[in-house]
Image 1 (tube, helix red, strand yellow):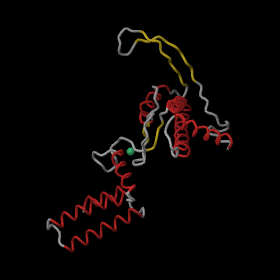
Image 2: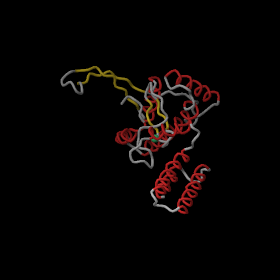
Image 3: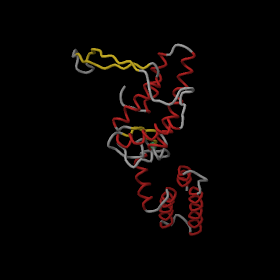
Image 4: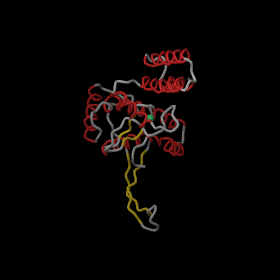
Length: 241
Ligand SMILES: [Zn+2]
């Protein structure tokens, strides 16, 4: 396991459960994962998200600021222990057989961690050094791995409420609209307005029906812009109109 990837955490967890032997360790396991998640998501949100660039140099600047603030603020991530990002690991150099090239021996570096959290922190920081970082998608809110040399704030999963469009596609559309000064609600309104207009032009709606439908669509758009309903709820309402 080398490159940092939050999405594969369930595989790691099931593996580590096999290694756990008593209740105390189980309790430590849950706590340590929770504190890892809390610490990393705060760090990413407050120190990394607003950096203008996404590369190892920018991550080093963000991390040094985070590190300084933690030391100066006397942060205690582990109760009773001053802040520091140190993790015990044991490194071994072992001969192994090549995974694909049968019979061919290779020299491998094997790293052993006594706790899953030590592995997660180590992999996270190694990822930062290599220029890879987990980022929270600006559309669906899930974490994805932002690889070196790439800068996007949207993941490549299917967007919530969509059947085919990924967050990246939805995001690009929103960005374009934002440049024109349009909100996501405004975009949805434009779509439903065009649908209603076509229906009216084909004579499938009376003038009164058309006026009432447009007024209702506008009312819901305003609600979404005031935050009373989400963009996804607005889309579901419009889909039924
Ligand atoms: Zn997403």
